[in-house]
Length: 536
Image 1: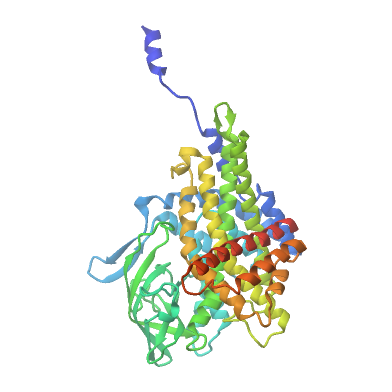
Image 2: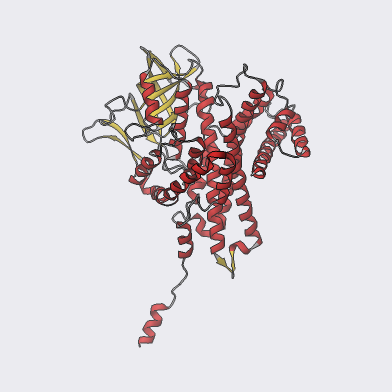
């Protein structure tokens, strides 16, 4: 009787466990256990490497463990951000309600002072690359937008507005340990990336302005300050403004600065990030930069930095995908063999790892060029600069655009392949963060200009400068270190494509040319990344 009872207790039980995999994954240190990332940093950080390396060894455990856990908990559907429009006394407050985990993560990440003048550029870069491995997580888009706001204020200081100096201090260096968060609200319903189509109105009010109208896609809706594009009354050109979310003393009262948040968007990815629709009704705003040059200012500084950061994020996403796919491929056994011991799976893992390393070194190399150039953030290529400097500034501009479209596209493919290594478990979001990061990278493809828009921009840019920067010189400079055969091939392709109707009217010829231009840009940038990888 006892034997029968025991058999009933054990019959059908499955003793299989994922504990070994989970234990190994939870104990990974995303920096210390990544010799490739250390090697890349050592190559580019130069004499500062040892100090930065030490800082990262202290920094990485928090990202790899505590912050990762907070990011995963904040991603649960039941705790996603929502709006509380009124308080109990019928006062309009438009409170963006976010989970405790996001608030804690945000406080700790921004508390690092990543943009403070006391932190070296490569240290900030490497720390951000580690933070991006969390996915968007409700914090990386705010970081990126804050960086753009800081750069804008530094590029265009305005002594007539002490408020702007205080905003710069609050976002860059912090105030009593509190670091403010920035945002950028440029999109309107009639045209996403078409900033000249903005109709939001800025009405002069003394030395300041009052905003009236609607912005339709406003990420970081909970920010303290935002960069907003609008047209000054009576003009047809766009200017740029800084708008505080609350005037002094009003944040505690939850009294917003002359605007309302209509709703929070329901997005495919970056779901932890509150993206809202905002209605301005007299919001106080401070103009930044030349009047009527808002498009050039916004694109040349704010969007350029956002696009640059998206490339860093894609590298981080791929590094995490490669690490976790390799770990699972080494753990999981099917039909008597580990997943990684099957040639098809081994090929997939190798392809993922190569893409991650190639993208990472490409991001390092572009950021190195960014740091080395004088005034890399411009509203255009300055014609009064020496020719060689103009060429380098142009290279940076096009590389940032190429990186944005190519890494988001390849990144989505890499994440999809990494998910496939896990089989059915790969799409279970309580099992892996990769599906969440996959959705984040798809959103990144659309932010700051979708693929076709930027492909058009790159084409027109290269055509426009051909008189002082011939295509052959552009290819030779960007692909320095490549074989002569490779350079000749890309020069021939580029020269031919610039004579064809890539941006003409729709026809069989233009469709064929557009297809070849898309392919050219992708292969050209991968060649650049490959050179970067070989250099380290």
